[in-house]
Amino acid sequence: MFQINENYQKLPGSYLFSAIAKKVAAYSEKNPDKPLIRLGIGDVTQPIAPAIIEAMHKAVDEMGQAETFHGYAPDLGYAFLRKAIVENDYKARGCEISEDEIFVSDGAKSDSANIQEIFAVENKIAVCDPVYPVYVDSNVMAGRTGVYDPDTERWSDVIYMPCTAENNFAPEFPKAAPDLIYLCLPNNPTGTTLTKAQLQEWVDYANKTGAVILYDGAYEAYISEEDVAHSIYECKGAQTCAIELKSFSKNAGFTGVRLGYAVVPKALQCNGVSLHDMWARRHGTKFNGAPYIVQRAGEAVYSPEGKEQIKKQVAYYMKNASAIKQGLKENGYTVFGGVNAPYIWLKTPEGMTSWEFFDFLLERANVVGTPGSGFGPSGEGYFRLTAFGSYENTLAALERIAKL
Ligand code: MLT
Image (cartoon, rainbow, N blue to C red):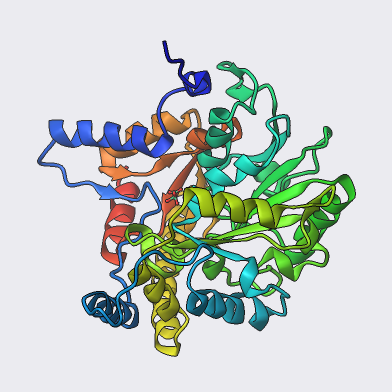
């Protein structure tokens, strides 16, 4: 008789955004006359920029001709895309990353869930709390997290680094030394970030203790402050301790197109074993590459027109972020984030848990957000709104909230 991976049985409930989607669908079914404004999951709403669409059309046509048809993509991704990534995301920022250190993928969600595979199951992970749930859940599935305590909502073998208003959302170095440290900056869900100097401290800490930082930079395009690093490789020594994961979802609207990449520097080694080689082996075995059409779309993100167009989209979403922040403040809410990230993190009104506020907002304002406690125990008493809606819907949601 076959046996299942028992680790899956340890997962409490369903994936956060699936649980919310179910709850919202049930509400909509019961209340078809109440149009909802969805500011929950961080899904983009602006159409793909024209320069990118044009590149995709061209690539589609190429696929229809024998001379320009493309089958399997190269293991690491097409050279044209890896070159554009290195030139724009690294060289332009003074980071020494080479093209063969880039692994093109179908997005940062899968990379951030899969990367743990190349590490020993005994490794101890440290996560910010609240945190993007994929980091913890993927380690649960791998059997790395120990036992779940429903009272504290914590796993026995996970090191939690609380990030709350009290510590300005900056994780503190944990007492127990972790092996793998997940950092998402600018942060999902809190919308806050660290300065480059603070990030440098994490790089120094990882190099000193022999830990690896798994750095999720999905929201990098939203950075507006000067003293914030756009890549962890802007920090000295990051090449020997950090893997960076990037996405095209939030900067270029690829949530439905799917494209991302991982940077695994060759200098990152464990007792002489190269993590780059391990990830290359894993990538070659388990992944057949992002589609040619999508990689051409990715290349267009870095074209002069593409850059100009996506800059406007980012500005559009950040206008929403400012409006949400301002509107909530005017209505007496305590709000964070929204300066270097398209997320607003707010304190729930006195006496309301995150899920109570979720229900209250859904039922009374027909606005969907994300309960902070869904991201971890330290998210209790907080709530996340995304700036990825349309401007009109964002203002309408604020009007509804103001009337509560
Ligand atoms: C979120 O809402 O946190 C994100 O959209 C989830 C994701 O990027 O997978």
